[in-house]
Image (tube, rainbow, N blue to C red; front, side, top):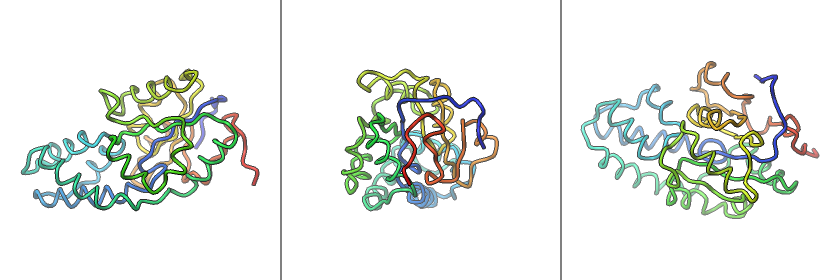
Length: 228
């Protein structure tokens, strides 16, 4: 699916969870386990709302939408304990490492704009420091007041490049509807790599939607193409 209004860009902003790193399958199991502990199963509707949300906002959605028999703080505590046990060994999503290395090697300014907090980012990236050091900066959910779908994190991330990047020159790469909406609200183009739960309506909001980063063609946005 593609938008005919594709324009060249100079900077690329990456989401992390479910886009660069294969964390969503881990998070889904953790959310499911904690929800079950407090009496309810995680529904597909709630699962979609969690995508791209900050940690605390995600926990609030579970507690409030499912009417769980616990406080948000109790849910957060259990969620963090399980996540910290399971996230250190997370792998890259298909095509992610290749794309990051390619853009960096061709002097394209890149950064991460993730809803994850500082401690969570540290845990998930600890075994992939060689790649994550290629990013100019990592903007985290704890750096902003409003999480995605607010455009705040994308606007902040763009401003931290040196010199700062104008939104119209930025391409966001996302997997979640909340992130896509935030990028659009920031005035940026978006490549979406949606999971199977994402509806056709949500996919259609992105500039283009692809099945995997292995399919991404940088030259569509005026970026250097892969050599092979």
